[in-house]
Image (cartoon, rainbow, N blue to C red; front, top):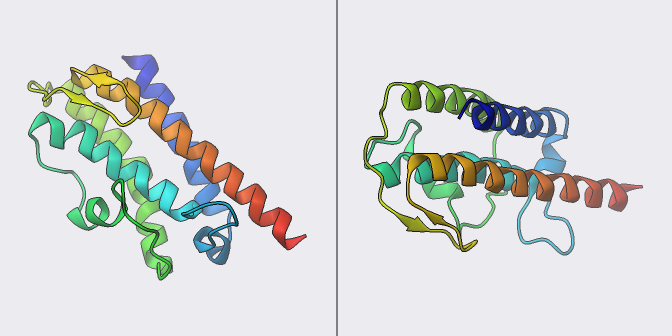
Length: 156
């Protein structure tokens, strides 16, 4: 699983780079052809990671429920995000990855409720969830990069 944790840390670094190197205005802009924004895609990865790993294993979330309720699948982007929330998300991107590794190493995920994702993948264990989550976060990283390119194209 070390490789999968390494991959998770890398995708989170990539997401953090976009978050830190995109203007606040551009993070919240919904580009033509999209139904959400860069910020929502990044916050959604944190919310989904908690649901896939903690909720489905019957464990408490490691983040405030606000993030889950505001950025889970099916939510709409919040266009009123304060800069302090962006800073909180920067922290969560790094910390939730570290916490996941510690929890996994301490056998925190002994139970897991099987779940079929909307992508069509059957998750039967925490290992399945960790591997799938990396794919899910990479997908949203791709969306965030495409949105940033669309925004830069609209401005120039």
